[in-house]
Image (cartoon, rainbow, N blue to C red):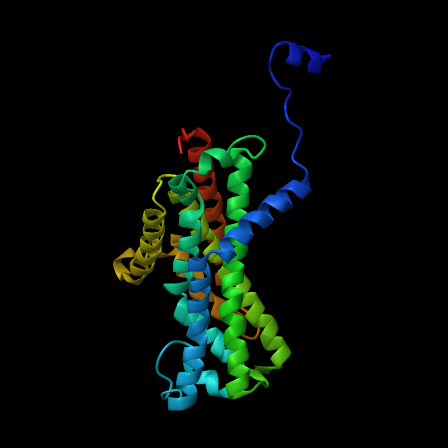
Length: 290
C-alpha cells in the first residue's frame, strides 16, 4: 500500500540497504583504477627502487662504519635489515607523498574531470562513495608499505643472506621471527599512512584541483616532521601524527615495547576518524556542479 501511495504521489520508496557484494564490486573497481593509473605505477616503482639502491650501495661500498639512517650499519649482518632501512629512509617523504597523491586525487580528481556528479547519483550516494574512496586509500597504504618491505627483503636476502636476526636489545631471534616482526612494523606504519590519507581525503573535498590537494597534504606531513624537531614545541609533539612513526623500531626489542606503538595507533585512529568525518561533513553538504 505504501508503495502504491509513493507511486501515486510521484515519489520513490526508500532504497534498500546496499548488499555487501555491491560494496565489494565498487571497492574493487575503485582500487583497480588506483593501481592501474600510470602515475601511481610510476610512484610504486620509485618506492621499490629505494631498497634496491640501498642494498647495492652497501654491497659495493660497505655500511660506512655505522653512519647514515637507522639499520644501515646492520644490513651486512642480515638481509632483512634492508627492508627496515628502506622503510626508515622512505618514512619522512616518499611513502607519505605516495599516499598524498592517491588521497588528494580521490575526490578533487573526479571533480576536475567532471565525473564526480555522475558518481554521486543513485544508487551510489555520497557516504558510500566516501567510504569506498577511503577504503581504497587504506588498502593502498598497506600495499605501498608492504611493497617497500618485500623488495627490500628480497634484494637483501639475495645480496646479504638470511639467518638469525639480532635485535636492538642484543638478543637474536630466528629469521621467521624476524619476518613476523617486519610484518608488524609494516602494519603499524600503514596505519599512520592511512591517517595521512584521511587528511588528504578531507582536503580533496575542499578543491577541484588534485595537485593542490596533494601538495597541501604533503606540506602538512612535512610540517609535522619539522615541528617535531623544535624543542620549544615539545608540548605539541605527542599530538603530532608523525611523532610516533619511528616507534615501529620497537618491534625489534625483546620483549617488544608496545607503549609508543599503542600511542601511535591511537593517534592515527583519532586523526583518521576526525578527518574522515570532516570529509563526510564537507562532501554531504557540498553543492557538486562538476
